Length: 276
Ligand SMILES: C[S@@+](CC[C@H](N)C(=O)[O-])C[C@H]1O[C@@H](n2cnc3c(N)ncnc32)[C@H](O)[C@@H]1O
Image (cartoon, rainbow, N blue to C red; front, side, top):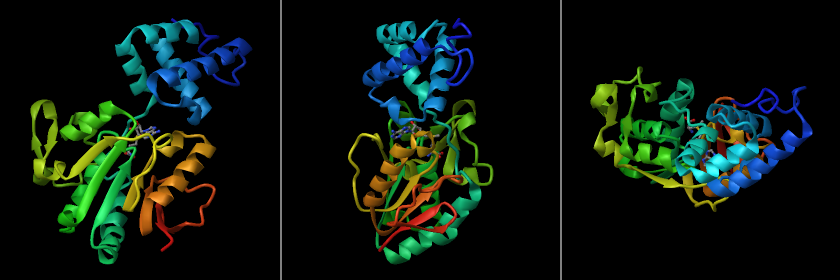
């Protein structure tokens, strides 16, 4: 088990300078190994997560933990899953999804012949598939294209499968689930293939990869909350350039474009429109 000194957090009295140095070195080294630049995520949250994983492994310090991860690909994969938070829900923040269904998507459908819709940081797909269901209710499926991206291949595989275990059904209660899902083993639900087949999932790192252009709607919700302020601002600039003029950016409930970006105008809570 990790000693209490090695598991203390930045600013904790028990913390010693060498430890902060070794944690910084750990972050640099591990970023290379997993291909995710941890320096762009908020320090306190990231360090807390690393220390929890280190403790669970029973490593006494970051250097010995690094050795374990280097020598065991399975543990390295588990570490990657552990540092990227994947919590997701269907129709997350129900009121905002009501706005999407009643106002935002109908307006977009009036303005544009076709909608390219991107869920950036899509996790296991509940968010993108919620948008698929909204489009279905509006009778607009054939006018929409759906793309989900995430940094993590594991969640993308689960999103492609379209099968949701009992702990991945939060938010479905309000829906007539029988209309959209078939029950499968152990309480899991499978999204109907004709809906699941509408979505495409690809790996994309919002902090490192180039962005495609011409989207009418981008959902980027509860993803940038983990980034440093500079990285967050850069991601919003890229998301703005990925939107078509008059396209819409849909953020999480407590998220704001900060610092304000003149190209993105807030027009309802959580929604920004790109200047036409
Ligand atoms: C908390 S989940 C949010 C899922 C969904 N957007 C929602 O609100 O329900 C955050 C997701 O962002 C992904 N993520 C983290 N860093 C990323 C990055 N640099 N590029 C793309 N996705 C990232 C994680 O893998 C995770 O699946």
